[in-house]
Length: 351
Image (tube, rainbow, N blue to C red; front, top):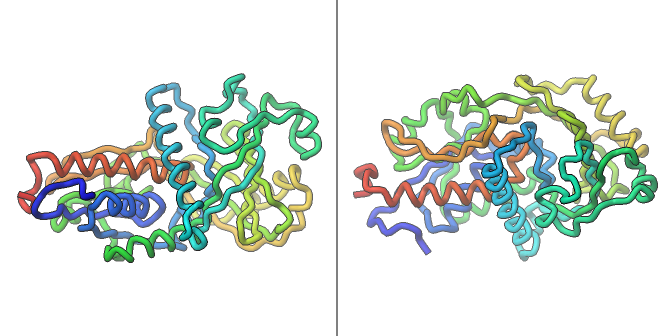
């Protein structure tokens, strides 16, 4: 049912067509906001989201002691996990690129303690792994914790076009547009949702938003059917099988580097490090390599801001958690859009 009672439906413009922007558009449609438009410079397969490993495991470069913010993240992740479970179990899921994959996470910091990670009750079948199993699976036996669970892998090269089709099927235009000022968009929209990722450094004048370089590759390895995720301080090793028989290998985190160039020395390091866990990967043929910069800030920004020409709702700064929190953040954005439409100081087009 529609979540507004205005005679004229508010026009909402979403800026950005990566995982954040498309999730917001689809969520708003589900709540009855049909007067929508999506603007973006880039579309799949040319978005940052397309390069993501896209395994649902909460990952942050900045561990926060803020308990309230941790609870917000938990809520975002739980909503996103439940959403992908619905997609996975629906008859329409065949084209969505969403799969359930079991695997191992090696935890080196012992920050889970005896309680385990905060997401242990959200993922499926969480359990601790003993040393004997670690030995059998070629995993380190000298680390504080190793966990086994099943989670979602989202192939964004499939999922983003699927989401685009869902949105277009409701009559929403998705338009190529280079936005240089959010106020410009507000001249013909009542509310703008800013999901522009790193471009928010300029669009939202946010100096707290920093690029963190990442690089990965996909290899042909149809025999591998489980993931491995090993976080080693500010570095991590990631092995993620996908339904098309490819395996995505990563990862890299270099702060304040905005270059999209693949670096051969990093490729070599990724190959060597992942082969320590699964030796057969060393000879797996490389399908493709990619590099990109994640939009990172101390806290993900999901909030309203009043600009000269109207209301902007920001949704950016997800870092390595773009897919992890995509639906949860879209849900928060939807609430903020409802609040904005309920206020009396709306643009005249709503009165």
